[in-house]
Length: 264
Image (tube, rainbow, N blue to C red):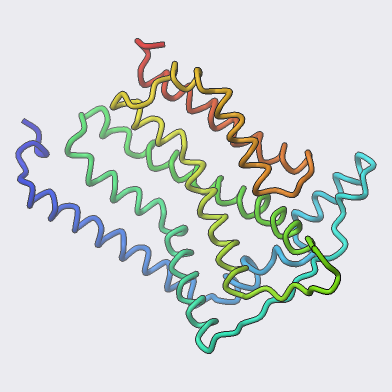
């Protein structure tokens, strides 16, 4: 009988509480660092995509010149940020510092999650802890970078310059802008965890490679729809978003097949 089998329900809750406290402490420490370096967090990271000098816009412009399409060069971003609440900036400073702390401490949070479920795993599965934490962290940070350098600037470029009338000026609430940028980054990081989610769902038989292949066309339509929603209405931007998400889906099929080799 494994250690996990011999533990009572209350002992499981006690173990979960211990790991949650450790993970929360790591997030708070990382959030404290983000709070202290507010210039880096806000000026150099969160507010950078609203400037036409942002590196992604320069890459697109260089690519546009190379293919002979100057329309990819961004001329201006018609957007001014404002704060209309007395404690607005302070509240955002705290909230976004906590979100940054979660991103920074993500590998440690995964480690605590793994340590909690490890007693119920086999010895061979427990030996894969380093690979699990490493691959999951790599996928999360890859997704966060993709969201920050691709989805965020494309979204800002489209939404900030979209007008229904010349009589209207875009005075964007600071909280709306910052929460949008932070949410995109975290959401893309979570989205890139798809292969990991499929791995565990395949282990318990909820997801199968046959099922994922059967609904491949439906998934591709969903991916294209997602790309159309979060990007400007041009084919180039949609392709940029669609390709990595589609690759993740195909990789997830391979992961599911590897977990259930007898069912392939």
